[in-house]
Length: 414
Ligand code: HAM
Image 1 (cartoon, helix red, strand yellow):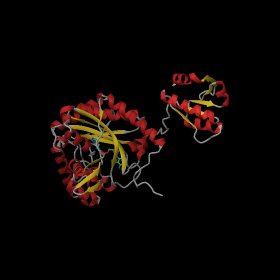
Image 2 (tube, helix red, strand yellow; image 1 turned 90 degrees about the vertical axis):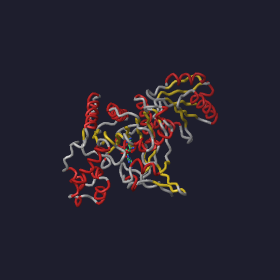
Image 3 (tube, rainbow, N blue to C red; image 1 turned 90 degrees about the horizontal axis):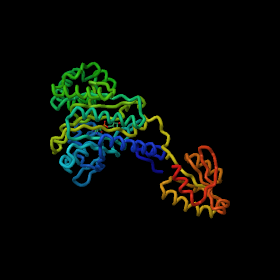
Image 4 (cartoon, rainbow, N blue to C red; image 1 turned 30 degrees about the vertical axis):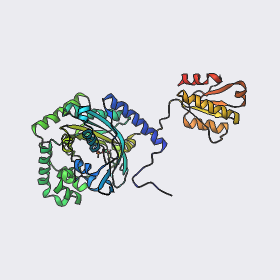
């Protein structure tokens, strides 16, 4: 027997129902905020991610699924932002859309050690707003993430924000960290000892307990920000306060990708265990330019869908509001049933029937399990009288409806 690859997941119907609900809610809320969908390929040139996420990023160093084809190296995308920026530049969206608000849903791939909430194939729901430095936009993007979570019925999460500042401020913070941590290298994990050399900011992100203990003693208070970046961050916080969004400033919050500048944020949920981030994002003001495009400061975020599912307590299947279940007794009734199913579905009424030759009792049980709102029964009696028995599952009342009125009757109750 074949088994699924470690770190991948079969999404079975019950979970797929919940996922679809999440997707429907997302599309509605994205459109309320003026975002339009973009779909980029799952396969991209691997070099795109080296350039945008940074050569020393953990994802690029250790987690890329690569496909080598003669001279070319493709990657299964580990995240969505780089591909969207590539598409924005390649399709001249700065000219056709100007300021662009884009959203996406789809699979991402990272070769990680699987554990709860950490998969090798997972899904992102994300948004990117490209073409503005306005602090109001940062607040709007965080508000969008907050509205999505509320729309999914998730509560108890925490929004943590920080500002890394511009590229110069970031470098300043990184250099200071290198100085502060040099003498403590022995207390850091082997990965962080390397990070200290290549990109000291990443030490702040390490989950290792000994590294955390060292980092927790550092006095980081945002003093690395230049006056413009400090003013921008102040304005972001003001806008969030005005919008009534709760957040926490977390001066040690950095992100594992090189493209971030200024505002970064992370949303955590207590039900998730060690991998507690349900979503994260931030500004990337220089990325479009660095990848060969125009000056187009941007901000975005992505939710990990599988982590949203872990944080969604209500995992009941999203049964449709109205489902008609048809029970036929005998061959002639079965033929008539085929016509009725066609007519009902053609009129937009959701319906299903028994394909397992169940008894009347068994079929009624099945209708109940599926959450049917009405049951139609056709047997010899009904055929003779040219009627159909309609049972209302809410009150168990049963009545006969004339055959030609059945679609009208069921459409009016949907
Ligand atoms: P990220 O923090 O790498 O950011 O991923 C976003 C979210 O994806 C995480 O907070 C987490 O919920 C989920 N996630 C990440 N890795 C896994 C995994 N192996 N298994 C399950 N879920 C996972 C980004 O990818 C950025 N592109 C976000 C962004 C958009 N920044 C600006 N725009």
